[in-house]
Image (tube, rainbow, N blue to C red; front, top):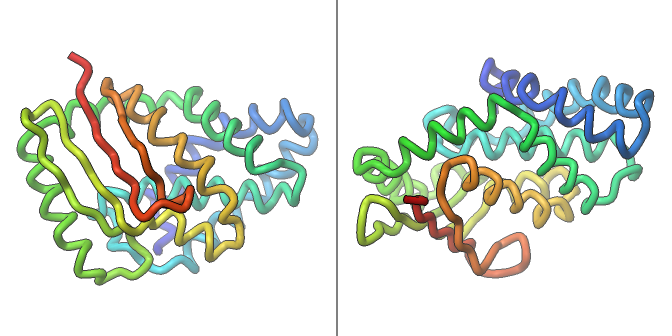
Length: 209
């Protein structure tokens, strides 16, 4: 993947929030040191990760966030458990104002026929597996525009974490989806995840009316 302005933006959006969370666990000096060393490792992880199609891929933000979390986790060098990293991740999302604004935008955009048709087309394209490191999904239209589903048979985040030897983070990062759904103004229902050993991740989104 390219370490472009989009990738840099993920780091800028979440660095301060993560530093606050790490300070609570590691102390101010160690938290500052971890975040300083995270920046070059994050860049390296992004650049050595296979392309998933760039910004045209609707899941690129999720993969870049996973790369940033993996960089922090690896830099901490065992000072944080995967569970604590997951808690820090969820709390950092809650504190990132730019993330909340983007999630609200998604909440307005995703419950439109235009976006859902595009998402359906992308899901069909993903099944061709042009980018092996990418997600593979199927899109499910709801009975109304206010609901839809996405079933993933391959997870790009799990693939990245496996390549980076921190697959134990994957179940923790699944929490990201519920935080996102909250700020989108919808309810996420999910009974299976690839990170927990299931064959699929079955997402169903219902707009809060």
